[in-house]
Image (cartoon, rainbow, N blue to C red):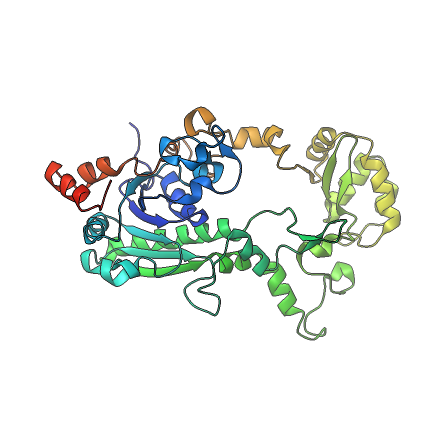
Length: 421
C-alpha cells in the first residue's frame, strides 16, 4: 500500500516574481500543493537569464509553453498557475477564497505588495486565522535597504562572498561563483513555514514571518564573518590553532592558501583535494606511498595540522600526485583510509559516478530541461515526481472549479469583471 507524500494535504498559495519562488518549490517536492497566482502578464521569470529552452524568439510568448528560461522550468516545476487580476475587487475576493483552504501564503516579492491589494497578513487572517504568511524579499522588510531594487547576486556581494575581479583591460567584472542568498533564503523560509504550520495545526493560530535573502547569504557564511568579528578582540583572547603555533590565519577558506597536507594538487589527468590534516591520515598516506620518511620528518600535530607554509613538503607532494590519475587517487585514498576528493567543475560533475548515483537527472522529456532532483531521499519510498513548470494561467479554470467549487455562472462573472481571462 502506497504511503501519502510527506506534505500531502498542505496547500501553499504563492505570489512571486523570479528566484524567491523556489521556496514553495521545496515544499512541493515533499508533496505540498503549490498554487502560483500570477498577474495577467505572468511572472517574467520565463524570459530571464539563460539558457532559454525552446525555439529562438519563443520566449516572448511564454503562454504557448515554448521558449522558457531554465530558471522558470526549475523553480516553478510542480506548481499550478492561476491568473488573477488583483487590481479588480473580484480578483481579490478569489484570492481570499484560495487562502481560506490554504496553510500558507508566500509573498516572494517586495514586502507589502499583497497588503497594497488588501491581501496582507491581517486581511488574510480575517478569513483564515491559522494562515501562515511568509514574505521573502531581497533585503527584508526593515532596515535602510528595504526598498532598494535588487537581483540575486546582490545578496552575495552584500554578504562579502563575491570579491571584485578585473580583466586584462582593467575592467571590473563579476567573477564566477556559486549563488548563495537566492537559494539559502528559500531553504530557511521552508524551515520556518513548516514549523509555523505544525504550530498552527496544533493551536489554530497562524503567524507572519519575513526572510531576507541577504540575511540568508550572510548566515550561510557565518564562519568567515564570525571569525572576522572574533579577530577584532585582542590576540590574548582570540588566537589561531595550536598546530599553527596559535598564529591567526585568514578567515575561512582564505586561510587554506598556504596549506600543504590540506590542499589541491594536480593529478595525471586533472586535480584532487588532499585532506590529511589529522595525523593518523597523514601517516596512512606516507606509509602507503612508501615514504615513511615524510612522516618521520614532518609528523605534525594530532589534529588540524595543514603543514602550513612548508614549501619543501609541498613540492614533494606536487610531484607525488602527478604520478596517478584522479580516479586512481580516489581509489587509493579509500583503500588506505586517507581523505582524497575529486575536484569537479559544473561541466564535469555530471559525469562523476557519485553524482550519477545520487542525483539522477529528471529528464528533459518530462520537464523540458534536464534538472536535478530534490536532494532528500526516503528509505523505501520515493518523493513525488514534479510536473513541468506551468504556462501562465494554465490551471486557472481547473483550480477555481475543482478546488473552490466555482460553477459556470461564477466563472463567467469573473471573466466579465476582468478578474480572470
